Image 1 (cartoon, rainbow, N blue to C red):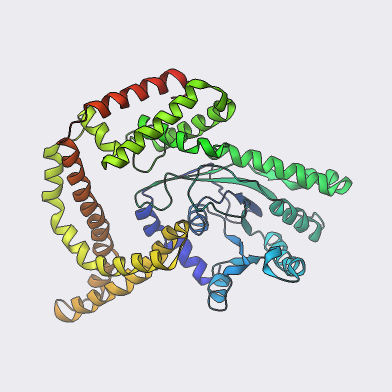
Image 2 (image 1 turned 90 degrees about the horizontal axis):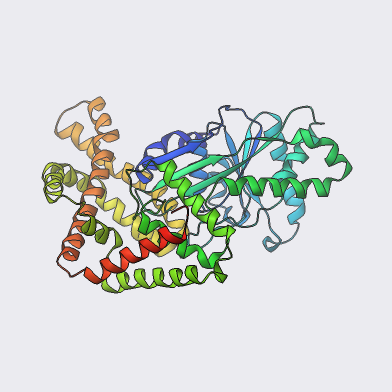
Amino acid sequence: MRPLYFFLKYFLKYPLWVYYPRLITVNKPKRRFARTIFASNHAASFMDPLVVAQCQPPIVFFMTRSDVFTPILKPILWASHMFPIYRDIDGENTKEKNENVFRKCYRILKYGRSLLIFSEGFTDDIFIRRLKPVKKGAVRIGFGALEDMDWAKKVYIRAVGVNYSDPNTIGSDVVISNSDPICLNDYRQKFIDDPNKTIYDLTKLVETKMREQITDVRKKEWAGTHEYIMRLTKKGMNAVDADKSIPLIKRWQYSKDLADWMNSQELDEVVEMVCLRDDLKAYFDLLKKEKIEEKHVAEIVNKKRSDARVKLYFALLWPFAILGLIHNYLPYKLIKNFVEKSFRRKVFWGSVKMTLGVVAIGLFNLIFVFLGYYLIYPSWLIWIGYFFTVAPLSGMIAYGYFNKIKDHKKYKSTLERDLSEIATLRESLLERINQFIPVA
């Protein structure tokens, strides 16, 4: 295990927990040396390998787009267990270059390690709950490894589904779901008889199993409706509008069931659903225009927010919030501004902010370790303990505290408004959802 990979696998547990406090793995692999190709969807670019590698026991190597292997990043990516995969647009000799990479993959599988391949090949610029076409690379590499080792050992493929409530929102939920393994050795004779057909058929099987692990809204134009329904019912995996008292697994299953039901219907031909889609969009467009949030409307209508509880929260946690502000605000702000100006595609923001933030905040807080040792009390043990506990925990509290202040101000502003028409419209939409959609 290379040093940087070791760091990413074990020392990113805390920042990932901060970013995704509710993170569950379904059907988790148990063996560290699994000789398995994990074929995953690719919902959130750089965040996907961080989340999957950290949450699954097997030691994995990643297949990554070759264009990120710049002279500066190449040694870092190598140390993180990453291999380049070359595409036609990457210049000459792509086939030969890929063959060299594949031979390295064969050795990895031969000696019991595993591969993680993002089989869709690309990430949507805007996060959409869907599965894009799965490529044949994972199955090809698996059979190539078996031929290379003369079928002497078993090689497996497992479909992986990474499900985010929102990959770029701190405090979001994640469910990683693994299919049962497919043993490629079971298809030896079929592969010998007709390799191309066998690779095609198994790729389709992997695609089917991957679809079973995620929320897959196949009609892209209905993805917004799926999200609106989850937001109104509060039963799904939306990052903001969700009832967190419902177990995450149930919310994930609801999201999947809703998408599966929508996929099974000819929605464009059902007048009630087309009207519902248009009215849902109009409702949320109205909220946006009025600068009102659905969660605040729901809280006011259902009388769920306690003013006394909020005031107690602010009173008890303000000292920790101020401490967290001192320890974290400056590096957090610098990294946030740098990433949002440097990366045009928002899909990269979450992962880059998290990894750079860990480094920047860690370096910044070393100042307090030395100040504490030389100015307050000369004990490295105490101040290193402070560095790993009080500084990061207070930062997490500060982030939640100041977001809570903004949220409460918006809530109070919404509370002062006349919501009668919006509430009536909302109730009507919920009734129609319950009437037309059986899984709702």
